[in-house]
Image (cartoon, rainbow, N blue to C red; front, side, top):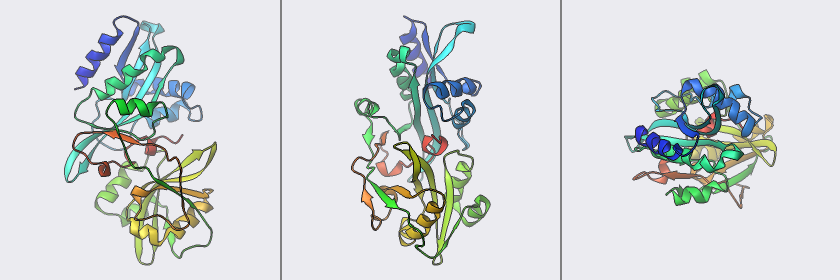
Length: 300
């Protein structure tokens, strides 16, 4: 499967000096430096390199693909498409997922950018997800057979003094209170740079939540929920979570309705929620979540 993708990439490069190569671990420092310089300078080269290496176990054919121009000592990276792989259970059957992450090509090499995407998609046997496509990428994904997820999103103001209960943030204590799949999720994401973990304890109930701190309109004041263990429990104790997040400088929670049991009280639905897309045969949209992806790994 990987071989087929590389052969196609070589064919496309025969007329020029730009070639597509898989990203190996040894390439990550160079990849990190490229993404720092050309995509998001708020993350250092070392942070980008670390984010490109998933925290969960499992075999992966590569870390994505890169474009390299030149030969020998003059060769340089001019484009990157990160990819994160994970095997996840869907209705009790293991399914291989590939999350399409940062895609960046130097301006003078933009004509080669599509070759990166084609190299990743040539790897058969995966369900592909793109959980943060830019506006120009969305129609391209549609042409390539990607479907839209329902990302209807509620904006919830985090208010002080609401709800009786407490929030646990100590990872060891959270892990001790979790079982089965939820404990595995925590272990797999403990070192993920963007994933924040907490456990809401209230009314004799508990709910494990994973969220990330997000930036909107230049303001990093938003808590975006990535995973909710027990949506009905969270609905009953939303105030406990909101109070905790507000105390940490996050006055607003963004929650996709597909993660919840219903629309939160006093919430507002976003007029234009950010799109998320996937492509895979025989896998329902409900099997696609926000974990094991760049949303957990990359703290942009």
